Image (cartoon, rainbow, N blue to C red):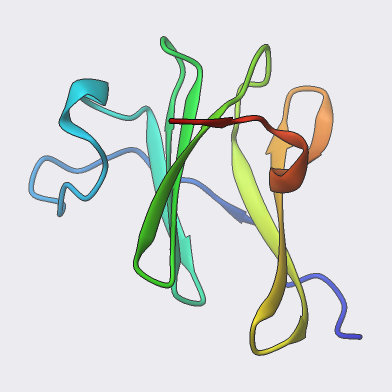
Length: 99
């Protein structure tokens, strides 16, 4: 098992960036990408949008304010995404998916 990749802070969105998340979410407070995974955080609707292997999914972040991400990788297709919030680490798998 590989250790966690180095934690990378999310960066503010630039106006010219590629908009890959659903348009109803407007503008994210932060976005990032790492090892072929993209993510965007929207604090007002409490949504985290993640694109993995060409699939875009939305998650309800509840009270979590997402500020960064790290990955644990056991194999090519076995990644665990861990996001960082004001309360500490939050596993993507622990957030409810939103349709």
